[in-house]
Length: 217
Image: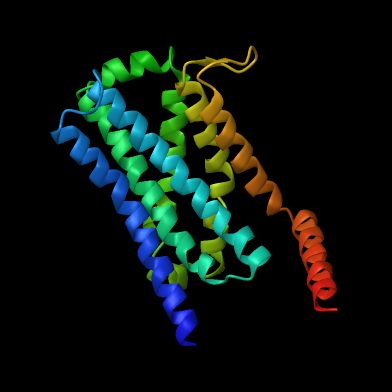
């Protein structure tokens, strides 16, 4: 019991450290003028990449928990998702305030040229109710509807990856330009979503059971 509690506490600490470090690093780089020649773009890119990373990490918790039997992972899923939302909000605020100076006419004018703006905004708006209802109060208040609402993550995840892909300067069809990171995240998110499909989950659990029984013999 003490070992389980210690593991739970350690994992909780590591998650919160992981959530705080990107922001601390960004602030340090800002005050030491270490944000490249275009600091606003650097902030946008780093907060966006951090948001995608935390979203992928939150998606990974459930399949990793039932594959490894480490149930504490599912309890950290919410915190990871909330950190993803936090950095997505910083990403959005940087774009609207620092980059465009709240000039919504200019933003709207660029939507036609840069469709990733619209896709990113849609992903954030869908993510907003998930962040608001992530607390235990709303889990009890909404009941079964809470799970239905949070299934929006299956729509949000592909939208976030698409936004990330389109925002990068690369050509997927020609496999040229800056496509390595978007491809890696696309593959990871696709894998994590596929693992959640009932037939895939059942097959993997059966395989795990066979391996466990074979090791016990």
